[in-house]
Image 1 (cartoon, rainbow, N blue to C red):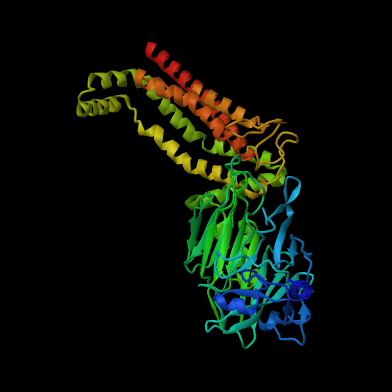
Image 2: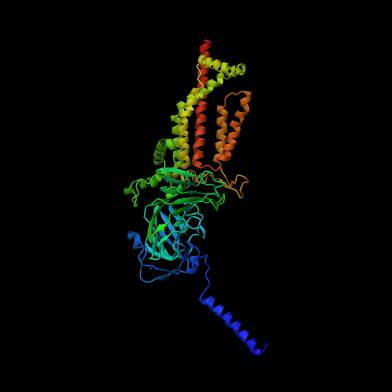
Length: 593
């Protein structure tokens, strides 16, 4: 090979390398599967969307002017999309909300008037860089959330907008161009905010349909307050929706999801004290209730709200989201248009309030009485004590009647056992002889059950009240021991976690409760046959032990009620026993005379 040939090869190689280097600098390659792909690559996949580097709306044109018309205006010129992620905050008297210009999503939503371990309750709980609150997925729930940087428009102190241009493949294969905008609006004194999702396309857009949907809104991975699903069995997360005016409950285990395509009015994820409710202006196409991606220590409870395909090149959807206390006082206001700033009427959001069902009126009455006690002595622990004492006084006649029946049964137990033994092979004869015995002795076994049955509604209503009453959140009873009636008491933090049960602190109320149960069982025990003896021993000693593990993390307010109720009932039983013994002794003296 001569010198000229070698020189030609070297020069050609340098030219080729230089050309590729220059091309990579001036025209960088684009990944067709990622936002930012070329129009040619978009044509290969029907429904694929491209985020463009420029927007058709200037910073001053969109969102602010569209609040009335519901349509984005086409401005003059264009604005380059931001290249750096930034956060923005809107505050009212009730909430503090932090946004990111990545997707125009929410990364923090704090309730300023409610605390969680000395911090404000976070309603956008467990948010990560890849799972933010109120992000949009173009298409159905299985799509990828928009992660591009959006332009931002601060409209006012309580309104903010985010927008960016995208290109989508139309049904006929052509490319359509549109601006996607999200506008958040808040109202002071209200836990509900409004989210407008606007699609403003030019004449090239024939509609927005990716698969079987236009877009999906994804709520936060979890709502606050922070909780450990493995340790705290008295807190929970449940899904609900309203269909034809009736609330429905959806049970979703961790790691699972359920899809519902019914045209319901609103959908919700709720905890014991707080809730997130999605209220679209028009019925949505469907929702996915998801528990995927969580752990027992950090559960996921997330909704994916899907909008049906959009026809035409312009559309505005209005979504309203309530994030706040799960109380009738805050939720009932949306049943009357004049009471809320959104003109909602008969929204039935107060269906989310936890109640005792048909016992709700009784629970309401108990709540009114307890609140009256609180006005006299502003301590909710004292109110629980006073209400419990009042209820024991009211039902004392029933307790007395039931106890008298039990004591009579103890007296007649030997004769009843004798009859059972004598006619154990003849049930029909046994029933006849037992009926004769009851008639002769004047004893009616049902008389002891009836007072207990009458008490059950009151017991259930009080249980639900003390277990769910919102005002107990953060309510201190005894400093240093019971700082929060909605949580378990605490006197000592362990430097370790107890295996199997996961306890990490010492609680005294569950111990006192078990002792009160043991004493109550000892005092009220009745004579039994040898066959019944083992069962009664288990009920007397085994059940309180089981209750100890079940109720170790129970709310202090609930345990306070149970303990005091046991102690008062125990005292009443002692008094009744003495009265009965005195009556019996007096009867014996009359017989002797």
